[in-house]
Image (cartoon, rainbow, N blue to C red):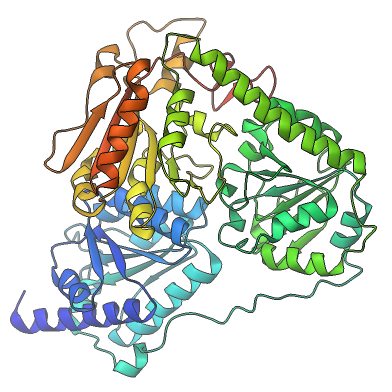
Length: 576
């Protein structure tokens, strides 16, 4: 690049960095293209650039940052295959409603259609996965396009994409300081007024056996505990989806575990007997509604509250409220009358179910203690005993890390948090996203609870974790590969002996040996507590630590059930 072109490119990236900085962006993830001006501009603007080895991991990290912080995250990559490498990350960010801005390079206008190096119609590739996709063709459009992208990501809750083609950089595009001085945030009045005779309120007043279901859309919207007060006021049971964990205090005596696939067996009767479900910030995806009684959404109304009309499950009948779920709950509390409450017998049943879930869990753990084998459940309990209460567990969704979805084996109580993959369950998400979570919450313990297959997918960025992620703990469950697929294979009536998804010899492997990466391997059940304590001691001292846990393939949440493809064929929800 010539000196004048280099100066122009620096000016364009300086403008982009100024827009990001004015909007409150302090960290960017990515792997830039050949143009190093992005790095220089972000450095000059005081924005930390987390240099990744893999573009997909960069978007996963940005998604983890966004989910944990509730703020916009930014990723920067090159063009062509660099953009296609981000597609899985964009899919996950979209399904998680995470505010992520992806900036990429692009082929200059004068070379499109000529077979230019790494030429690709990138807008067509990413458009189905984002809320907004734009290519900046003229320097004058740089600032307004970036500001629009930031607004959409922040307020429409999803990823956006902006392409900065090479001719834009060559032409410059320095904006005036005033154009980027103001933050890119729209006023969002929180309080709303629900009509006293609204269909939703009428349904709530008629309910005598309600369940409040908290989805991922309630993340960062229940800081004052409105949901817990609302449930107490109407005498409702409280459940959550996997992505909704952390939005409510799971120590509440009204909390009865997760919904759908992960429903505790003690709570099944609540779903069978309810006469109203109030879904707050949930799309009611298949995992969240798995094995729901057929009457829910047909004979039993489902009150849905979402910010976007596209998130309503229209196959479930009941009132729909297009609004912020937290503000809606506050408004409902103001309108509810003294007599608007559940049947006292229902409220007593809810507390009975809650107590039963905890009792059954303690009895089960006592049974496991008498077994000579190490169980993943015991690993989770050892982490619970050793780590501070405000830990954040970043999860995957494989055969054995799914144990962390079982309540109260892992509980979001006393300030504990949870970051999980969306319904897409992109393999490797949790292992990579954990670094973004840690950077968003540097003072909190962050634990990635992942299988070895997912960990291997993200391993390219272990050096990135070592450089930026001090205090991050990876708990790697090592069964030798892709356990869920192996279970499917093993249960086939017609065996396929020449294929295997796990390697028994790989159960004892460790992570790559890197300077600054500490590893602890659990030897057996007797050493578990000491091994976890040693791993956490190193982690608390600011190190990145991998705790290797050899596990048996049979030690699975749904190990007693028939593998049914995407979902197990359960004898009863919450089966073991």
